[in-house]
Image 1 (cartoon, helix red, strand yellow):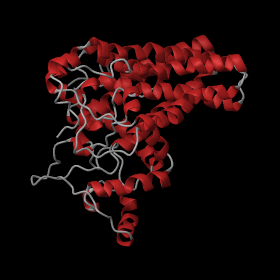
Image 2 (tube, helix red, strand yellow):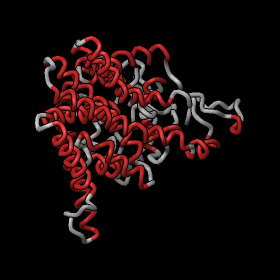
Image 3 (spheres, one colour):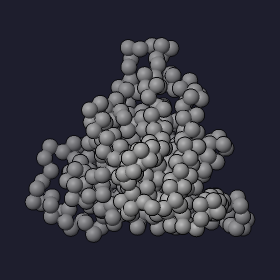
Image 4 (cartoon, helix red, strand yellow):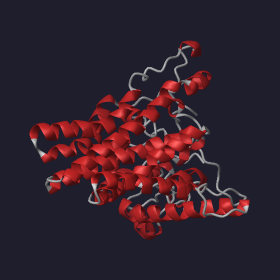
Length: 398
């Protein structure tokens, strides 16, 4: 069941009131240029922390002040909304801004002279820009249009995470909210335990999926048509070009920012399905993916900045829907804040457990056996339940 559709507005008269706000998503790759201006104007190396400060400091505050927007577009206007090229071009425009920011920061790194605090801020700045670019790649990579799928790989190139193109679409969306999915975090699993499991597991899964695709077709895996190899080749070419222009010293910078970038993706993966589980049917198969299997957030600001990634339940139930048409569902479990806030909570395990563990249990009516539980944490969680039973849990609608 969806929520917030304005039945008082005839579909023919409905307008997207957030249409002027969507270009704010392009602010993130612009922030490095503002940081550069501040650094040049003041000489203060702390200026390079502007991007992380805005994304993880300012945005959560603004998000809290402006609150949620749970309105959904009427289904009658969805075809018109999806066909509007305005929304599509905003995702395209992120890419040149992303690459311009990367070149600028490579030039600053190659110039040298930054104290360690400025160098760390420079790495964090580009890592945040390229990490959020993976969200743009995510939006583009789900579409049927060839150009958009190719641009998805372009957005993934700076982080060297091109295998996400394979694993996310053909692996994660198939196995989401099951113990078999390396990108679905488990109740009681910290982000720091999840990170190596998802980074290595997603890479291994992507390679197996692509190997299987070529084996079924009776073709060699070692071809430019291999979506992992051609994506990685794009990263090698990009890094090679930047090394030629800025010198070999820039390579360490590129590698460091890549780790920050794909780690930002993985912390978002961590919070999107934490503890949620698809149940087995009588036939022994997992139930169909539906809005109950992803955490949702309707916070206005972060949804605009992330091309509505936070309406993740509808995305998994309907992967081909464009971001401007995604809906909020009453049945979706809700995060207490937007992604910018929850990312900060996720990297501090005691905070995360305090905020989220009881919400997972409430979603399943206090039944720990229905959740996707981290095996090493099972005894601790059972003991906690015995000592402090869940109060007024929400019934599981399964």
